[in-house]
Figure (cartoon, rainbow over the protein chains, first blue to last red):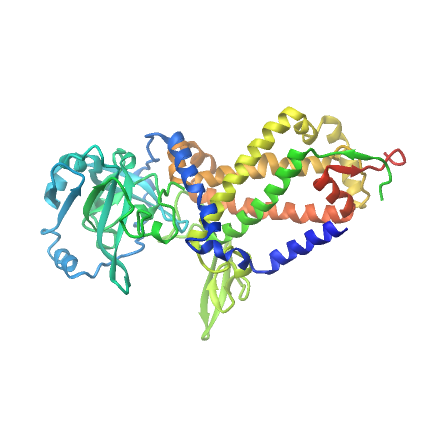
Length: 254
Length: 263
């Protein structure tokens, strides 16, 4: 009798407490959070094992039923960015730096002159929604090869024009990273066009990343610099991306 | 009350995995509602309509006469659900704080806990399935032809709240447990995987099977409701059939049967 009563009372207490019992799991450094977050390595290893270098599903023109929904930053306010946007990004330069043999800068004209890939894919936001759009851009691998990555390079870090928040220490610009497995995947492109038109400002003009086998927040918009590195420890708070530093998974395949 | 002999009905592996699943499903449901709150609409198709409407359920908030009201739309019908859905505790949120983990809005935390227990559920299901295939438990769960012939009588007995306590599960029990273990939970896992852009590359056929990522998300939600339905009936049956005996069985494995009197 005691056992059952204790169990029922325990269950009722759990249900009535409005689940505040588990709120400590929201704190980034709690032991509970670290335990729960241990799934990420398992998820990444398991997904990598089953997907290999397979392609994300691609769709047909008929599946494009609406515009691409913009999310996150949609209108960067930095003076440099504003000036470039007003002149159709003629002065825009993409810089590839870090663990590379040749520090490389490319204009939008340089990028569009390279062989491109066009793909109609589904964009999945971490919030749960999806949107299908057509993307055209240069395979990231092509661009990285121009700069000749060192053998020690493991990650591509994307530095962006959009200040996603203002903190006490100043503006925090969006940053994201992927490893070189995803960087060299054929569908990973630096897109400069969307649905047959130049990439709109709301969707990341002049250049945004597409990593089709991961969630939307991995696909940095307004990219100005790609830095090759062997460690993410010194970037932001050390988790490898703006959102990973705020509790989301760095590997966002799920 | 049954007065026959005690029989050893559930093995240790069955009892342990039962409780691991109970805990996992508790967390999966409440973190799932947290995740749902980040985009409180269910759609049919490959994508979510923003410029067009393919939603079958939307939970939102709207200002009516200077007051924030919770509005739930189901298949075109609209309901004022202020206090529970759409608006609760004075703030706009689809499901209320009492039904989400964490209680406050945190998609990141909800996801981390959800996937932790998703893995726990999948791995313990696999363990249980392998063990049950070897120890014969699977055969006890799948209804036989004789069971199905006994279905009308079993239905009538349940309707009259006349429960038989025997070493074997009755046919309604078998059907209920088998549909959770072999239908609902696999459906949950497969629709969950269909929402993964990574897993989509491995198994694009899953998207075709369910009719697109957003339909899979909708099925994931509806199957959750079905599992809550199972839970309600499961609890009711335990209370009606003799909670002490039922709890002893799932905790220790030992179950008191009716014995010869009405076997």
